[in-house]
Length: 598
Image 1: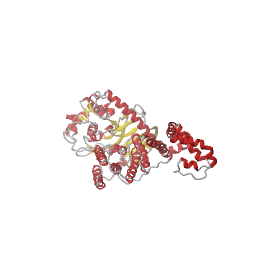
Image 2: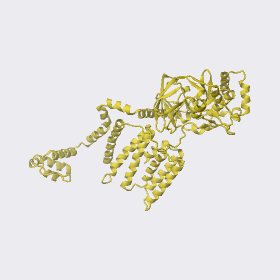
Image 3: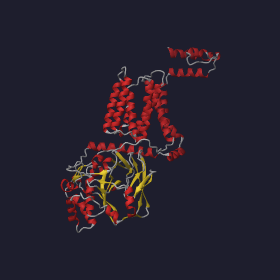
Image 4: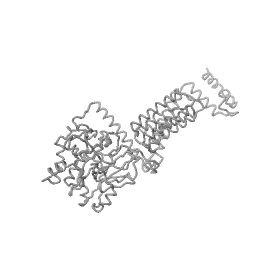
């Protein structure tokens, strides 16, 4: 029950975790109590528990809801296990949870939990089907351990030999998660999204400079009257500006990378600029307007996705440039006047460089908890508070660029990541979510400007982005933190290796493995089982056991006058042997009786 509950915890919200703990405590104490209407009471309790879970899931009958129901049913079943059929249903639910957990997560922790649940469940089935209760003494524990050593290699063989096919049949919707980028940007939008260390994806290389790791997810190109940034739909862009975007024929280059993308239950796919998906997704599209990728269906399983760099020239017409300079009339007059005064006598590139220096030199601070005086007040941020985080600076930079009639937009995604010192990879978590500006320059195309990075490390008040925080002079790097970080990185490396090999083991890899398979692999798999029994045999060797073994061998190999039954005593078995055999082994039979029964 504990392992089954733990295997579901990674996908649960904090509120849901507390609810599960409460149900576990309730079930544990109810297991120790017997009363007349216990079944009826449990039925009512189960209905209440399932309804509360539905409320927690926002009344959505999602895939996650039914997975969580399995966990709750397992816990509630534990409260009443006084009959064999109830133990059987308990074990059956455990078996289903072990499979669901492994398919859903695929990481090293889930794999260990799933295999442990599977082994314990098979042992439980064995115990249930005994004619009498087996007490957990040393002898029976050794027997159960022997079963475990036999089950494990069988599980491995089934995994290695049987093909795995991805079936894209969608019956239930997936519940929403906080992984990803908000659908619209207001001042403060990233605060709830970024305040999480949940892993989003892993970059399987270190060939890039960490400061260049800007993974694109969404583009925000339209500012509403209440100064909320939204994304234009691809259909709208194609309908209105298809003829305004000119593209040269793309040329694939000899540069690739791949990522392990977590199952975030959404359609977005993070990618570096000028890289396209070449393997890992069967149904996806690339936006030539935004240079972003999306899958046609939700990403519900971890995937290894390969990207290849390409070269392509982009040209946009004056009408499309005008779209990227549009602003509502509600933009502050103070901001307009500031741009008029500071843009004059400067080229576009000079003005953009001036803006970057302005953020770096005028007491602007990076702060995850800035004081908010009114909703989306960019002027108040720019002239007064001067405290904010990525979307404050990106949104402000784009507004100041558009006021100077320079085409610009906000790009959102993930930046920097965490380098793993043990393996060739970077981990990106939700705390690495980021927003930056992108400016159109006629001779260069879309060019990245990240005003957040212009803030000196000494003016970063607090940050959960690992890359932004690593050079912060104020960050506390105690010895205990370094020990924790070392252990975390090493475990992340082990999890990375396991997950990568697990996902990469497809039908092609399986066929290659079978062609190269050797008898020694089977010997290695069953070695623990064989060594255990050899050790057990050595421990059991003594005079009495050897005499008993020899006696059984004589009975088995000698000629007989009558059929020997399992219920026969040694005297009865010996008397059924032929006369010649009785005469031959009479002396040994006396020795046998003396040693066994004396």
